Length: 413
Ligand SMILES: Cc1cc2nc3c(=O)[nH]c(=O)nc-3n(C[C@H](O)[C@H](O)[C@H](O)COP(=O)(O)O)c2cc1C
Image 1: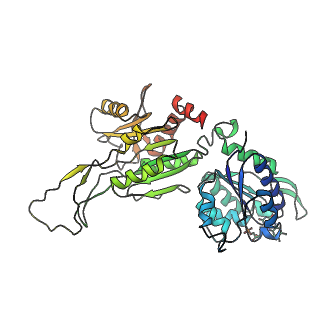
Image 2: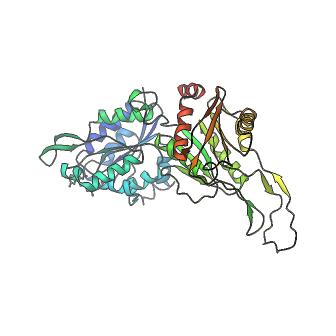
Image 3: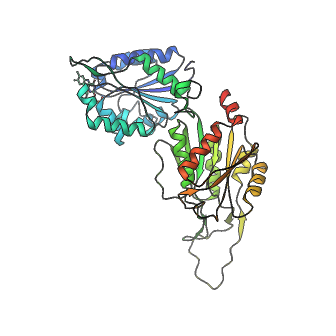
């Protein structure tokens, strides 16, 4: 399998093993990939940027405050189109910064601005590697989905024979292949079956303005959509989450687009739908908007009549324009006759999978931490038991991954 056309960001931090990363660049290029190298100040003490520049055939990013490198906000741009980010060697320092969200130089800043799957190849003295602080940071990064290529044991630069040596470039390249082609190779398929896949998710309610202080909304909390976003990210996807107003902390390393009204949600979804292969619409979009919201606060009076107009049907338009390489999942919140109404919606909106729930049921639907849903598709209806929303999100993604239409799409991406 090649890396043809893949965009890789290679972060190089300051350790003796820096020279080995030249070989990583060479192998990525040999595999047909493009590589943008980012070096820390300490890394430049070990190997010159010129060596990486010559092999990568690209300018090496070194200084966050360089007029040239930052002329186009390079620290954001460089990671934007990345299929994977590799940090090799990763010092104890960059591991600590990455685990704790510190962004005080080019590499640590790009790490936060890049939502591609992350591969880290630590290299350090064995006592540093075994230190609780370093191990805690490693666990933290792992829990966020980073792939750690463990250091190997051998003769270290400090003169001892122990574990701390950076894995061989060949091993790191193998991991890179696995992450990029996850699902198509055996070992990583279980962990990162959505690696490199763009997933667009919507969540939360929408708000329709009545006047300067009032609005119409619904009881959606956004918990379901956020749980789906988290699972997709952990499975290696590049996630764009279009969210109405919620109080939930968003998952890390995703592209969060905040919106307010149904119209804004429509625009944001359509702007991001093109690049997505999997679209999951979990938001509770308002069906009506106030035709003429007032700029000022409406004075209290005995009767107030509001004229409402239908909002645009996002799911219907997505279904209408669905490409052969797109899989569309919708949610139906019903209060009666759930399966029939949901199946009708499933057909009308050209969906691949419908998740339906009865919002009047106890412990399910809006606001609750749990949900009881039906999964409806062309093959039939499957009822899931009462589960946490995270578990429902997990089952939903499993249902997508085992769906014959998804597998057909995935085999061609
Ligand atoms: C000769 C030498 C070798 C070093 N090797 C390593 C190493 O392998 N791993 C590591 O974590 N730090 C190593 N360090 C220390 C780092 O360079 C130092 O912590 C630095 O602040 C890391 O900065 P950076 O993470 O921004 O590259 C070494 C320092 C020196 C002088």
